[in-house]
Length: 153
Image 1 (tube, helix red, strand yellow):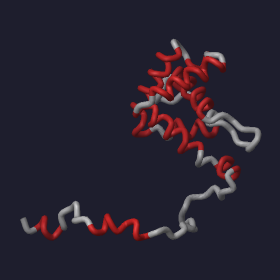
Image 2 (cartoon, helix red, strand yellow; image 1 turned 45 degrees about the vertical axis):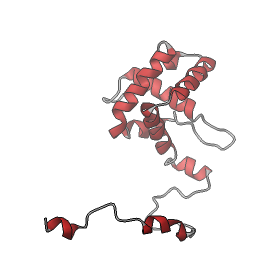
Image 3 (cartoon, rainbow, N blue to C red; image 1 turned 180 degrees about the vertical axis):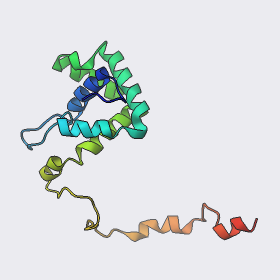
Image 4 (tube, rainbow, N blue to C red; image 1 turned 180 degrees about the horizontal axis):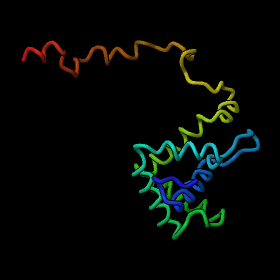
C-alpha cells in the first residue's frame, strides 16, 4: 500500500504504529487502525499533516533504533509509550489523523451504536444547555471592526 507521499518503510512503520494506537478488539468486534480499509483512508487523509507525520515517523525510527515494524510486541509497546510521553505537534498530528479515520469507519460506528452517516441532512439532536454560560462573552466589547467602519477609512 505504498503512497507517493511516504516511503514504503514509513508506510510499514506508520501502519504498525496505528495498530498499536488502536488495536483490533474481538470484544467489540472492531478492527484495529491498521486494518486495510482504515489504514488506506489514513494514507489518503494526510494532507496538511504530511510534514508533521514524516517528522513523527522519523522520531519513531530513532526511538526504535531502526524499523518500528520489526520490533517484537513488547519492545514495540515500550517504544510507543516512550513516543507518547515525548509528545509534541508531530505526534499530535499523527494521532489526530489515525483517530479521525478510525472513527469514520462504518464498522466502528456500528459498534458504537451509531448510524454511519454524515451529520447532515438528517442532523443530530443536540441537547439544550445553559445559554447563560455565554453571557460573559456577550458582555465583552467586540474584538473586531465592523465592515462599514473599515470602508469609511
